[in-house]
Structures are given as C-alpha cells and as structure tokens.
Length: 597
Image 1 (cartoon, rainbow, N blue to C red):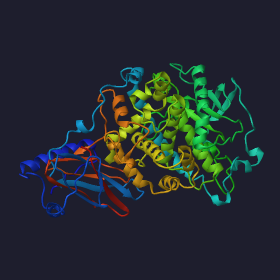
Image 2 (cartoon, rainbow, N blue to C red; image 1 turned 90 degrees about the horizontal axis):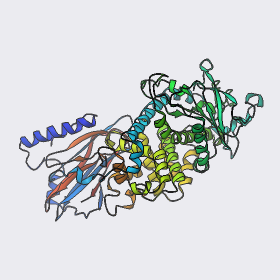
Image 3 (tube, rainbow, N blue to C red; image 1 turned 135 degrees about the horizontal axis):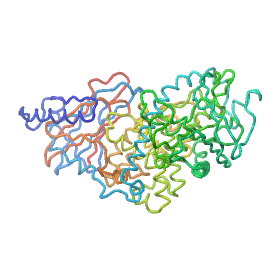
Image 4 (cartoon, helix red, strand yellow; image 1 turned 90 degrees about the vertical axis):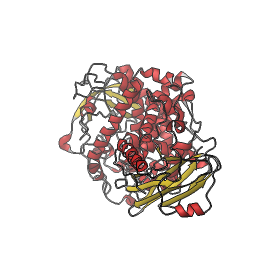
C-alpha cells in the first residue's frame, strides 16, 4: 500500500492526500490497497460486529480492526501518541486499511448550528468577537515570547535545598528576612501616588519606576493608573474602579480553588497597575502583538533573596502586582492599536487569569516551598480554569450542566458573564480543534494549546471522584510540576485520560449514550462552539475521511490525536490499521475505534 505523506501544514495534508488518492484510483487500485499484514487474517477470521456506540481498543503501535456489519456503518478511528514527556519531537503515525466504502460526508458528522447565538454575537456587532479573539491570540503569542525571555532568569533565582524550608500553613518565607529588608506596611488611599518598577526584570540596571495614581481601594484590591497613558478611549476612573470591584467580587471563589496568595508588602491587597508600560513592551519575535496583562514572577522573590532558598532579585517590587495594558486605538505607544471596547471585554477575565499565576507562584515559593515552579502549559490551563470559575460565579450556573447556547443566553447576567469569561476559552478550544493532530495539550504555549489544556482540566475535574476545588488546590500546592503534578493530583497516569478526552471531543453530544469515559458533562462543545462561529457555523474538529483507496501519515507530538473516519458497506468486511514505523524511544501509539453511525 502507498501511504500519503504529509507536510506539517494542515492545508497540505488535504491537498497531498487527494492528489495521491486520485493517482491510486487511476492506477487501477480498485477497491483499495492489498497485501499488507492482517488482510488475510481478516478475510479468513472472525470480524467484530459493533453496535453504534461500541468501542474497540487496539494493540499499542499496531492497532488492527477487522469489521463487518449486516448494515452499513460509519466508524471513528483515533490514534493517540502516549508515553514520553517530550512534546518537541514527533512520531510518524500511519492510518490505512482495505474494504472501506465511500468517504463519509463531514457535514453529516460535524453538523453546524442552525444559527449563531444572537444574544452573544449581537453584543460584538459584525466582528467584535473575532476582534477579541485576535487580541487574545496575539496576547498568547506575546506572553509566550516574554515567558521564553524571562524564564531563564526566574529559574536562576531558585537555589538551595527546599527541604530546609518546610511547608507553612500561613505566612511566608519572606518573614524570615530582617524587617529593614522589607517595605513598611502601608494601605494606600485614593489619590495617593505609588512607585512601581515596570521593568519585569531582576537586574538593578533595568529598574524603571513609574508613578501611578491610586484610583480605587477595595478590601483586597488597589487599582492604580499611569498618568502618562494615552488619552483616546482611555479607561475612566469608574472603569478602573469596576475592574477592582469585579476582582474583589470573585476573590472568594478564586481563593477557594487556588489558595490564599501572599502579602509581601503587608498592604493586604493585590495591585492592578494599568500602565502604558505594558503597551510599550516589544515581545521578541512578535513585535505586532500586545500583552493584555501579565504577572511577573520576580515580584514575589525578595530583593535580598531568602538565604539558602533564592538568589537576590534587586528589581522585585516585593508586592503582588498585575500589570495591565491600556486602550490605545491610534497605536501611539508603539504602533499596535487596541480599542477600549475590545480591551474592556477581555480585561476582567485577564485579571482573574493573571491572579491565578500570582497565587500559583507565590504559594510554591513562600507557602508550600515546592522545589520547582509550575510548567507553563499547566499553569496556563489553571488560569483558564480561573476564568471558567469566574463565569460560574457571575452567572449562577455551575459545572456538569452540559451548557449550550440556550443556557448561556437565557438571562442577561449569563450573557454578560459568558462574553467576559468564557467566550474566549471556547475560542481557544476552537483553534485547537481545527488541527488537533498538529498540537498537544501540553505543547508549546499558544492560544490553541491553552484551549486544550483548559478543556482537559475541566474534563479531569468532572471525571475524577471528589470536589473540583480539592483537585485544583492539589495542583497549585503540589511539590511537582507538569504531568508529574497532574498524575499526583489524579492518583493515576493522566495520559490515558487525555486519550479518552480526545475521543470525547468527537463522540460527546454526537452519540446518544457515549461511554462514560468519553463524556464531557460541563459543556456541549458541539452546539456551543458552532453557534458562536460568525461565518462557518459548524463544529470545527478536523477529521480525515478515508475512502476505498486512501490512507495518510501524520507527524504527531506526545498527547496529540488524529481523527480518521470511514464507512463499511452492508455485508462488506474491512480492515483498519494504525501503526507507527518511526516511533522513537519511550512512546506508544494507542488507537481507539468507535462505531458512530
């Protein structure tokens, strides 16, 4: 059999596949390829006859499925790369077979919504939602570039044996420092001026202190504005007060899920600094993008260091600060425009997102004394969980309600909460679904990876026994990082769960009664994502149809899945194969087959 080789471009896989498939037809291949291992055994042996919804699991690295049914059927075959933690190198996975019928129509397997969710899309006008998603995609690119730039410095701050600093139930390792090494306890008042270093660097020569005016003070939040911000479409004092009060309102929810953060500056508050300094940042290799906001990890490292635990960080603010961009519709700061209305739409969700980063790092450093900081993909996934929890808090809805378009638009407060906190999470998942075989939920940071990481954490919280809150707290307070941290919190290897989650992205809300392990009980992704798409209102999961003479090969990272679909005619016998000729050490390719029609 000839296999269709593909490039890493999602467009090229389809073009190459169709051209070679046509060549096979004209070469006289007839009913499909013959002569590969397993064909004769399938012809002479006993095939499996599956009812709709039934599932088979293949032998790792060599899944072979011999099928026959009295009536025609449609099947989903999902290869999944498991094993090694490395997501940079990829494995070659081949999917092929014989005896297939004509390719199924993807429109039948991925039906679209009869219409958009007008209560949401009307709020954005013709393109407001897309503009917000573009801003967030640029934000993901910008923050990834900034993380790559800063992480070597942050990694160099941790030193010594964390075992000499046992976990504490309250307070912080900074309490061991002499009082003179810490700023005095102050609670700012409205109109006060605060000096904040915006350099996001530990280096003393980089220090860039900006004078900000305190606009609002709540019980646990301070909103500060930079007087040099652009004036066009600028946030008003009332806008900034609203952001402070918005975070204040959801802090009990976020604290319950992720724990109490530190209070290194003894003011009892998180500082929200709205400053053009964020707009000024030029992300390396991503100069046309804008970070909406960020938390700088160095700010919770003491300037003088913790003896035996951390190196000094002279540029630290020794304070809990979130740095936030400001409207600049003309792009006067550095030529990257951002409208006030668009920034307003995504700001509160971004604040909650960055707050989780603050809590995660400060607790690991000062409370649990973990030996490592969290890996980016899991840290980002938890921050998108924070956005989801904010949605539940504001809307009055909850997890495991299989929410669809009608649910999130049934009342004004639900629609407002959805547009602020969840529209963007689903947009990120939409990006992942368009090319899942090219990506991993724990891959290089980006909008699509973040959408997948959020969705999997939600799936894992729904599937495991016990409370969601205990699960999220275990991830924040765990001594490990990445997959090891996830495994400790779940009590089992997470990769089989990722495989089941991947299958569920197709079968949930498509099959009447999917197997329990495939269910995604909190969100009806099929109807909700398709309803939110402004132009092509269909579920965007990329499937690869197999016809009588077709197969494909793909390069897949660890944690990635592909979605092959094929038909078997009534009374016909077919063999479907998944193998991996270039697997590499420490990897396995698993395969799951489900009859879906």
